[in-house]
Image (cartoon, rainbow, N blue to C red; front, side):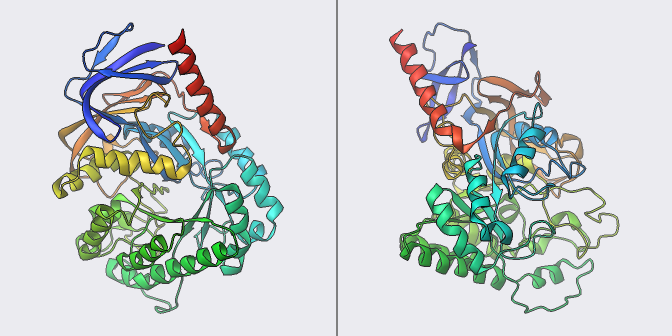
Length: 470
């Protein structure tokens, strides 16, 4: 397979330029001037933007074990439709949870012939394997890209929350492997005992106050500092940040030299709690969507790079578990389903705030790939990298409808929302997998294991060098 794509708008090396991208054997082999003569067929995408395929490092796919919620086939199709060419699967909501080498091997067996995009995996730390470091060592050696823990009830019995003593035991092992420790940062402070929520969104919001996040992030700051002083420089990452007040601890951690990062999600950046009607369970997630003033502060934090990147936290379930018919927010499963709409949702808001598509590529591709340890092969349009592209019409306005949804259950809180920026085509390692609302050929995605990423990147570079000498 040897061909080229070109456009007057290609995002490469932190800029948008006219360029021709030459692709051979799944890799980008060269970036030429637009209109250059190359010894292969060329597809010209004209004014459309060719950007690096997005890398979504926070996706709950739930297979094996809860495939009635979601599965790898439908989730990775939705990813491809959203211009995502690589994602990282979370360790919970599946059965078994990915907290042991055996469970991880079972998950790897489940993905066979189901991946439309490339897929990496997070492992999990729960009290059991935090206290059994041999078990954690085996899990990390098997190829997970890092691990996640909850500081609060996860809602999944098999994935209990950790406490400070568990974290202290796990951190040296994670520092040894140089992988991130992802933390669901909420601590139940008991300030709202036995709240009556029902269908009232404001009551739900008040039941999970900012203090829960603030205290959790502050705890992780203290534990990271303690570990570093003991010689264990552990990467700590706060997932789906919602509270603007927690940014103070994050900034303090960064200034003190800790490897401490945070992400946020489209729902926290595009929705304000004031606009959520009572009984609309599709908007429930944890931590919750907060007030517009909080939302604006998160955008400011992105601009100031206090928040490192944006991911979906796609967390689907069945319509029944969402209690859509009853409107019971208290009983509804917490999670937002919107995997394929991240780019248009963020671009619609971001462009009005002075961000460019180059910025979006950094926030949703380059930085996420770097965080997950995929940055030797993913996250940028450069020679030696996988030929992963999202071809986007940044001016195309469309309305999100149930019919457009590619994930398993055709529900999302964004139905009826008008957005800008349509994914026209998605290429994964040089193969066109999605084009004009249709999926092409068969699933060609591969698993991305930490144990093989470095060697694969070296092989890629050597192959290109041999080709150039030939």
